[in-house]
Image (cartoon, rainbow, N blue to C red; front, side):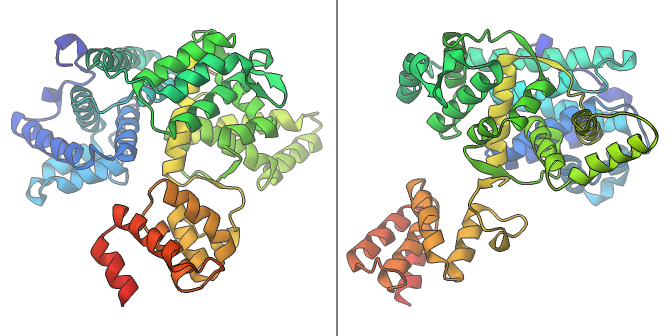
Amino acid sequence: MTDMENQLTVIDGNDVFTIEEQDTLNQEIDRIISAHKNNRQEINRLVFECTAALTEAEDASRKLENKGFFRRLIGGITGSNKRLQDKINCNMRAAQYASQVTLQKLAEQNLMTFDLLTAVNNKLNASLEATNEMFKTQFMMMGKFFLKNRRAVVSLNLRLNAVEKNVKLLNWQNSIEYLDFDGVEYSALDEPAKIVCLTRDFYELTGGKWSTSDLLLLKAAMGQIGINPHQKINYFQTMKTIAATPALQQKLLGDQILKPISDPSYLISLGTLEKLDALDNREQYLVDGTVDILQEHGMDVDSENVKSILVKKYMAQCADVDLDTAVEVYDFLLDLLFNLETGKEENLIQPRDYDAAMLQPGDDEGQYVRRLFFNCRIEEAIPILERRIETGEKEAAYMMALISLKGIHRATNVNIGLGFLEKEMKVNSAAYVKATYYH
């Protein structure tokens, strides 16, 4: 995607950098992208951070050094080039130019996925600055850039003929009219329930790994149960319905729990869902306290309205979005999928039966199950280990081998233990496994 019409030109680099500085900047951005291009989580963050920088107002006093991308960018520029470091850190237009170059390079290398582009465009459309007359042109250019890239992703997918149809998805699509949720056929459900069922089914069938072709097949499935993919829905009202319906929330999260989200700026739907839950539970005192204060001043207020206002204010402050935004159903569904997979990768969605006393901040499932293992909580560890063995996670088969070979649990068959060691060798260092076991 190198034609001029697809170039992102919000900021003219010559206004803030010399040619030599632009060359240095280009080299460092290339280095950062090269280092992270195989890390989907890092690329996702990079796109959201660059988009946020490009859509913020000019503010020379704003410090960017604590933001992930800019911290890496500034830190990678040699200390002798202090002037360039200071420009990026303190001059918003300089930071915006760096962001613009980064997004353009990511587009040229086809590193932005269809669902990522949809999620970031949803946020762009919901941005609090989107209706600001000063920034309208800027937002229009950004919107066109992301939509062009989304079309380019589809076009590339078709050109490469990457149409290895997912048989599971095709079977699901063909039988979708006969599926039901709580005894009600999908086609008879209300819209939020249809959206949740489609999202969760698709997520589980793909294991969280999907192609652009898979996502296009999802659009066809929507039509089969009576959803017009282009129909507009209210983002907040739909998330509020999901949060207020336990069965829908459980379906969406796969009967798992959502941990507190410290940075909802790139996880809009999960951030909204978690805050709605929090205000119903651990932060209910905020709702009750606000209602009490208003009633003391003679105002008759409804706690649900107070909760809605608090959630909207929270997301406006932490994610710079207006949740009362209309979005196409298909784009909303892709946004949910993006949030589910990112939430899983960042360990924000975890099994409901996790023991909070054994789960420490920042733990992933591997760290959690190791803690169970070393605390002799073998009965609880085994189901998790078995699931992790199926997905080829390191150390899972090794721990199961120890359970068998060392008689820690009733499964003491030596052959079973050796079989687990063989499984571990396929995903781990054979030398490490043998040395540890025969030590």
